[in-house]
Length: 201
Ligand code: MG
Image (tube, rainbow, N blue to C red):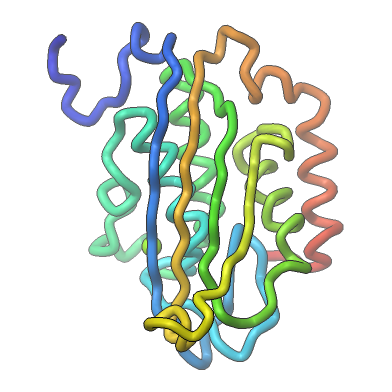
């Protein structure tokens, strides 16, 4: 098969089921906003990075890009490019979702694990899921998310940073994948996520 040089999976490949894996880690610091899954989370500290440092969305994007045979987020939105400074990572996710659809895929599901010591994130899990489902145009049931503590072990356990790991499964859009099935649910997902966060971006 001919090398496609970062253009992603071929039409033939998009007719199959493909898995992707993403991982990301960012340090925490005072004076930064904490953005996770496209939501602002109340916290004394926030993640440090070139964009808004949304570690969860970065790992989701890398899982989706990997499944689609595309280069990772760092190559798609390089941190050497000043125009991405401080950028909301939910925009990256919308872009990646569009790219996946362009290649003929739809998201079957993804499952994400967020490793974080503090603050307590359980109350925000559904809000983050709704935000990400809204950005990807997929049903809420396609987005799995859980949070784990490192029980004081290592840098994550000492609350020096947060880590996210994600696996994602893509299937062919013409099998009636999530973005097609969504139809009338898109509006409701987006509306719910605004209501859930109670604040603008
Ligand atoms: Mg990152």
